[in-house]
Length: 77
Image 1 (cartoon, rainbow, N blue to C red):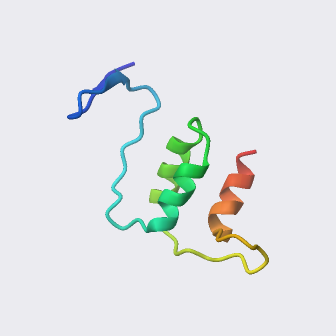
Image 2: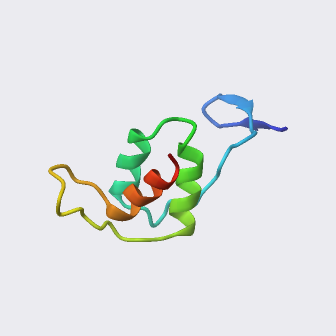
């Protein structure tokens, strides 16, 4: 167990904390991050960093969704 301290004054338990390099992330990463439950976001962020991919739109959906991300989310259920 550890402690994280951030420049904005937040601090807390660092267990489960994930730090990633988001320099090459596109907007669809952030869209999915907002969609996911809090307990799933660290795993998703690490998976996204480790498995770089471009947005692959689902042609059968009326909303903008990525086939690669949707497959990962489905595998977590």
